[in-house]
Image 1: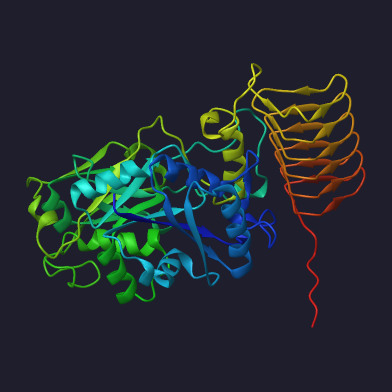
Image 2 (image 1 turned 60 degrees about the horizontal axis):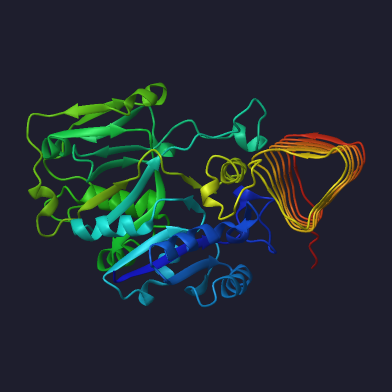
Length: 456
């Protein structure tokens, strides 16, 4: 298909602290006991896109990701891992490798995307429309566990309530307007010239930018070169292209032209939920020539059906949600075969007397549970030692964790090599690698991690 594939896999991330560390970069965070990056790479393989550049922030993170990818995808994919400086943003990461891009079109995918939408479908739409950019839009995922118990702790309270707003033409092929939820104020402004040009626009607040884009290479490279201050694809590069496509030429300034006076407003905030089918009407017909004239950018979308799964691991809440989904309603993404009880219990694991592993659970190899334990809607990693009378609900327990007798864990994430001493209680907590939770202690909505000692 003559597409180059770039996977932006990040590095360490403060948003995911203390889950992400120098030893476990974001790309290797386990989802159903598989690195999250494996979901993207498997998806690319399914679309027969096998020549892949994985961009990782930080030399050490890149080394770890490279070692894993070489081992896991030997003879399957040609994966080249490239290190770029930390904290340069998605546009900065692309700018750092821009000279390596030589194909006519470039597929850019976030390494934290977990979806069953094939990238090949987006690429085919992009090529068919001759677009400058084609963005994958998906339904906004439902966050939080399926029962009353919460998950994710403090991160849940910080979840944004304002959603992205996109404007589409009535064929739902062209992306005409996009505003990030973080930029939405009381009203959404839409220039009258834009409405006159397209005739009719559908405003949607129920779609998520999945961070999967097909770009025309020369367009992408030109913008990265001209707009040196741009750091974000989603917040800067894509909106710039969308603003530019309805001008007489792309060089006409930052989104305004002489006759682009006045604006129409769309109410936001509390009214966003009812905007999914709201239409702004104007008397003129959709002037397609404005989107195909020489010297303009054509911005297109591929909208995934509501039956498709699409979620990004960009917060602790999302991490909990995705782990729950991949062993639950989206189990087809896991790559595992589930038992008749709708769970996965590795044959090398050991269960004590009267211990129950419920449906939508996973227990990895070499892990041992004592007597009278209860595990519900949770993922337990490799070589964990769990005592008796332990309850684990809606949680993720990573590898080599020791949980002593009588502990209760709910809605929490326990990282590698953690020790919970007897009768410890955790609710909606995150526990960083190597931390020791003392006996009979009780924590709620806390982030626990070892202090990093600094020398010199």
